Image (cartoon, rainbow, N blue to C red):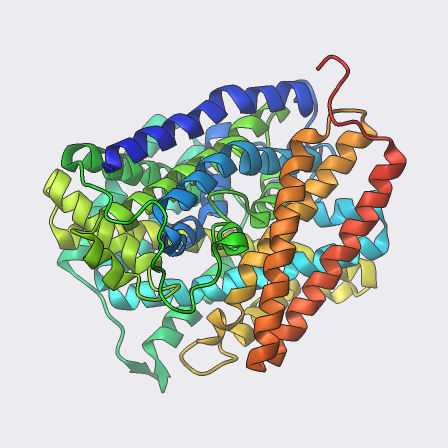
Length: 557
């Protein structure tokens, strides 16, 4: 099969979800009201609650939820063949991710910008809230610790990406000042920002930067991780308009340019897909496609982390409630398009099936490296971009998105700690500096808990997929309870909720068995705690739904 067909079918499906299904969900189910006063106006403080242009906010939301996960997940999952990954990304974006993301944003906006964890107490009780917040915190901890390790590795492997990755911060600060201190509009700052960012990419290729192998007795990987955590700590405490919003916005524009380049190169080069539709010769020890496919690809199909961002930061910046369609569902569309590009790069960026199989010789072997190498091949063949420059562009794209996720993730960890401190009556942790410091301490403990090379950041990663998807199911539970209490149709959230919950619980049970067999007691205990917390919240929510007399569809339907 030619990759052009893959791109055409995928984009047609995802965009039909935006133009048709999202409009239906926004108007008939969530019933977004342009006259509703959003928390950004009601609680405006110039730091977290800031009314924001919907396109800038879309950029923040999209880049915060994207990270490296919509690249890593599909890049690993194609080991089962391109067909299952393609179908899950396309259908998941339309019927799962968009509904989940817009629903979490809408629910939070209707409740003064409160997180889904805080909402769970009002709807389900204090005990359910504690369990919900525990799952939230663990997901954020995994994301922040692991992404620091991922970015560190990319900066070491691709030193040409160092200058553009850090230059993007300076560009974002400048754009933030222009946007919020002048009335110049979006067009000119966007053009200037993109020009400077791509200029920095060329500069990085000309002047690659590498840290010494050891600095003060620490490896270069550890030093990069420490620098990244220090940056994320400062960025998470700045007012959102100073860095978070403009950085995410310009990164979103940069990503769509990168996607445009990848898709254009695909149409020109017209490469054949080297990978099979369904791989019947998977390497030994590759887990079963069902249910692992549905937790391996989270971001790009449906992801609980999106609900944290939607209800944690985006809901506090929404100017009009109707903007939730662009920010929430539109953010899911952008991520689906990135996941589709990852599938194209990791299946059509190889000369032959043998070359593809040589890379995918074990489960997890593909990952970001396959995306960068395969994508660079397509860019070189289609647009005659030098291989080194093409690899730098794709590496910078992955690093920028992982970095923006760390910014937002650490800010969300602070929110969770402050909420928990409020419940426990620990006044000291209501201070943002203290809460951020504690969040950093947890991240550093995990990142460096398994050795000086920072391997700990990936040690708990096997649990991320299942924990993340359980959080998505729990978020859909919260949205469904709200819809039921309002007397609105619930089938559009119940179907994805039931599917994700069943697949994820099966996957988690399989992981628990594997951890037990391997004697991995730390991960075993964590998995049992996560499963118990999720099931307790689910049982409580189902009881509430039963008392609400919910209906699947409205009488008119």
